[in-house]
Image 1 (spheres, one colour):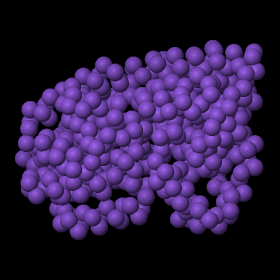
Image 2 (image 1 turned 135 degrees about the vertical axis):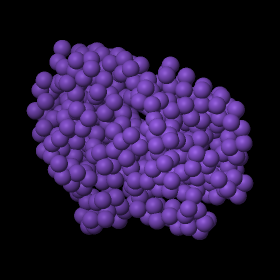
Image 3 (image 1 turned 180 degrees about the horizontal axis):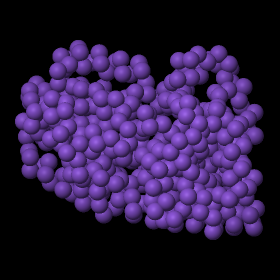
Image 4 (image 1 turned 180 degrees about the vertical axis):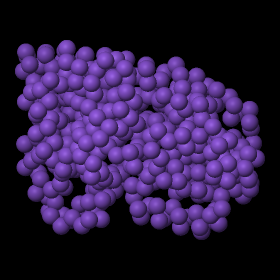
Length: 429
């Protein structure tokens, strides 16, 4: 059996690190430990480095374009940061050269995913696709936000999307991996085949249990006596930091010693401006801190989790919510919006508190500030949940089983020449 595993995300940049990059990096590390040779092949979006190693994993990048007339540099940057449907001929050529690959793992849809599928089929190799951002449960507002940079632009890339089979990507995949349980259920209803599986994201429980909270508080001027609320995620409307800041403004009225730290790279500049304006309008400049996204190996990240009293995840849409696992591993209580994968990930009153409204979010934060016992109970149960169900060693074993199933599926389809039909999705364009 070949030892080469090819991972293909849309982009992969340390300075813009997010959940997808975290997942791929962890998977690849465990695959190396198991004797495999993972490699990341991606675009040069947000990076001018053609090759490098990230955390010991080789990364190869290729030039690309967005096939629309009339795109400004601002439009291209927005597409780079989120949702861009890019096209790269040299990336396809590189994938076609991976003749010794055991399996291709696409971490993106659209033309990028179609490129992976095309190369895999030409080489007769199995391929799987992970729906990191979701497909079947994405709110229309989120779809509209991703499409905004190309509104009114003439697209010349549709013929290439057709040639690459972008719309039939999920039809052709040997396995479709859903990171959210609700997403998997929706996929099973929408797709006309059974090559669908639920595989949650994982977490390095040992790493996040070893943070130095005192160091983080000293470095950022936060007193030990102050009640610290933490949020980690892209500065983006999807993550709803605005909602959290507004809830925090109400918390501060009752708990003047409260502090809020937001950590994450900016993917929507206008949203960052609105967030800063909200902070200023509510007189929170001295109590709310925004830190840029941290490199994956930064001790500040684990230290931030260790420093907080409560972790808040108020997203408007969240296929899974890997940051909740990181908070659990740090033995911190979690307050999360009752949306998407978070509804099945967090057990209300047991491993965290779910908020169905802004009022719920405010009340949950106040309740946790007033009750150290509740914080301790939720934190301990969350820690146990992370260790027993979501450690990367457990998830990697399940992923290997999925790869083996994909290999069997590919062999069976080659023999039967079976075909499947998939309903179109707004994100398949």
